[in-house]
Amino acid sequence: MSRISGPEAELYFQQGLQLSRAGAYEDAVTSFDQALQLHPGLAKLWFFRGMALCDLGRYTEAVASFHQAIDFQANYPEALNNCGIALFNLGSYEAAIAAYDQALKQQPNYYQAWFNRGNAFDKLECYQAALESYQRALAIEPDYAKAWFNQGITQGKLGQYEAAIASYDQAIAFRPHYSNAWYNRANVLYRLGLHQAALESYQRVIDIKPDWYGAWCNLGNLLHKLGRNPEAIAAYDRALALQPDLYQAWHTRGLALDAIGHYPEAIASYRQALTLKPDLTTVWYHCGSALHKAGEYETAIAHYEAAIKLEPRFARAWANRGTTFRKLAQYAEALLNYDKAVQAQPNLYEAWYGRGIALNHLGRNEAAIESYDRALAINAEFYPAWYSRGVAFDHLGNATAAIASYDEALRLQPNFPEAVSRRNLALKQPNRVELDRDRDKDFGLPTGSNISLVDPC
Image (cartoon, rainbow, N blue to C red; front, side, top):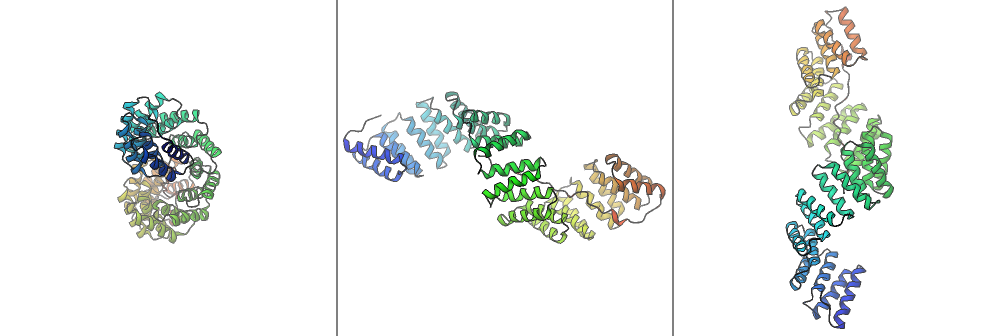
């Protein structure tokens, strides 16, 4: 690289370097400009000026400065690499790759340029090309932890989850306190169903970085999935203490409270999520379900309506709304809602089952049996439908068919006292057809709970 001739120019150059190291980038650019007035054709002045402009986020000017450096010194891989970085930050990923390729043509073992090239291909969603670039970087510099980390991210996008874990393990081997690698490793393990290993990785993240609210939230998600709901709630509380507007944590905290029957607290948590983000369809739905279980039927219906307004073909919301109308003995309205549910999702057996109960209450027993049969065609193991099918045959005076249905319900669920009692009555009174209003019980609302991880790094 050419030397600066003249004490004044050298002074401005050294001053610019010192100001850059001190973070005074504006003043550094001024010093480099003063040096360039004396030596406008010196490549390294343009290069370091471009570096300072990058630090200021003035990437377009930085690209121009790097181009000047390259014009004055054609063999300048560092300038080409940093020009690529500036172009990357401008979102010009193809141009960035071209700059990296030029740098690598001049210096094939330039592992940082291979790494940066991988990042640009990743942004273009050319994941295989990105992976190959990271592999080239690591072949040159095997202890480059950040390249192992980014390779893990790309492998995850390609569905190569075991390979991604191995890459994160390598990153951690070189940087044991690499919290981002521990976090992404935990997320992949969670997705693979390796729950104990995921728990341990989340715990490592929290040990290294206790204020990482995303790790607390995902730890809560995993604990909830494992049925460890009091621990999950404590984890969500830690996340929310750090980030009170994390609506995902308010939602999933509500699910954990809901799971242990703490419905008023769950409703409050769901409502806090909705205060932060009112367009959360599933939260309106889950809040409606909790309100139903708390016996607040009218309010539950309003929440299901809000979910349906956001997603008109939300089959489970229609089905649960039907069940709530059924609880209010509004059977015709319930039937309309169940019909909407099965139109939106024909394989939703719980909706066919609820529809059958509504039809029973309306005295339409043949239609009810058809609805139960639709439910059982989808899920033959759903014993409540066998039981209710038996009740409908009972009401039609068909004791033989009723007993056969009760038998199937008891085969699937031997501890089912209602089925035992009705079977015994059918045996004793084969022509009994009176309507039993006490059979309308919930055997569980369809929930369809989905928990998402806070995005990985």
